Length: 148
Image (cartoon, rainbow, N blue to C red):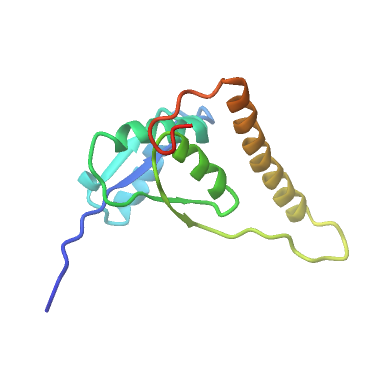
């Protein structure tokens, strides 16, 4: 029987934006270890407080090693903006959505539809902010990947 040797690292990120005393990365790490992931395969990045910093700090970690593929897993609603930010910092990703959000048809207004709309507006504002900052020269310099 043929068995391919695969090596994978899980890099999870997130600081303590909610000021709970424990970073998102620490919480994720404990979940991953509980699921049976080997600790040496888990890489933590606990400084980032937003998507931009996630991409920035993760790119620093990724550039210290050689990886064949970088898979970016996040909400389907959040995936395009995350991919843009990672690309800005020189990280080409394979995007994989963790969920799919869509409005629900209803004769009466639903809180869920308002929430999905709010999330979508937040994502589009992130795109506009990125390109506005780019025009103003406020984004940090690109690192590789399409250096423009």
